[in-house]
Length: 153
Length: 153
DNA sequence: TCAAATTCATTCGTATGCAAATGATATCAG
DNA sequence: CTGATATCATTTGCATACGAATGAATTTGA
Image (cartoon, rainbow over all chains, first blue to last red; front, side):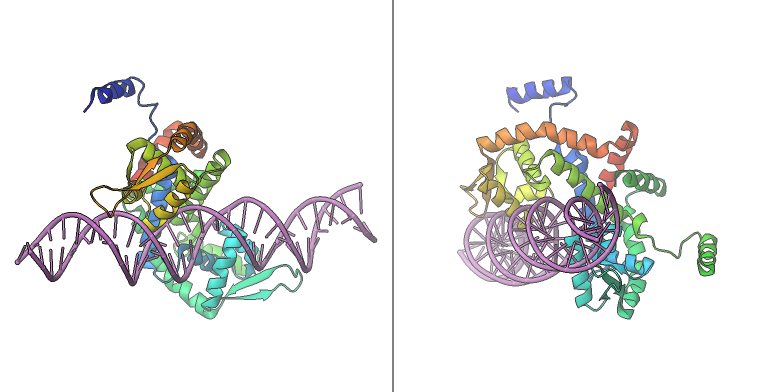
């Protein structure tokens, strides 16, 4: 270790390291890593569907037929992004689309019987994914974490 | 509200809602939304650089010249992804690349003077981004949140 | 009522993000 | 020493993710 290094450490110790920027301590960086880990866990349980695709199916299962735009609002997805997601679900026969009778701008989306069967089959796996994602935390920690995370989202 | 709705509510109340899957309560979904919000805050403060690009610059500023692969490891980025990030930073003159003298597989990456100037200018903004991201939490909550988030990442 | 503003969907461009395959180089093990 | 393995970088393909622009349809407001 050089003399310069020793001097630097002294300076850092004096000011509580406030002059140094540590990427790995920033909330954005850790948030990105936590999200990555979750997506990886998701893929290990549900290989043939992505989290956004699953979210669209789960929401349609929850509320029934609705417009593409409304789906995007409910699952926090950009209009351009949701279009791609719905297109791929449609191509796989999990959802079907139709025109709104009254408001001709709207594209109605609904589950097909295959889509309904798929989401009913996948929901138990999704519970396991949530469990595994939160596994590093105790039950109490998980509850605290979810409460605080919700305040940030 | 219909009679069916009342019945459903009774059933849900009886079993503690355990038979219902609420997407908006799942950790993965909230994690994705929190990450989205952070990226949006980031963009409002630093418009000409993405979070991954900033991360690469910050890490190079921290550790100095290193291989592309090592950068990817340190900022949790896939080799294919980090290549694109470095390519774009290179195109903008913020980093420069060279071949490793001994190990000819490696591509060394380093900040240019412009890159160093940029990251020094941006780090104060990054601190503000972290602050704004955590603003919905009290200081104590933020500390708890970061501790638990780190356990998940 | 009717022009302005808004909403819904689409398209384009750019940027992650990752799996899988490939090629070049380096290391290891027998 | 050399064949098997491992590592590093690249490329391709697919899937989000979002800003901006566009067009069609609806709603608003003076």
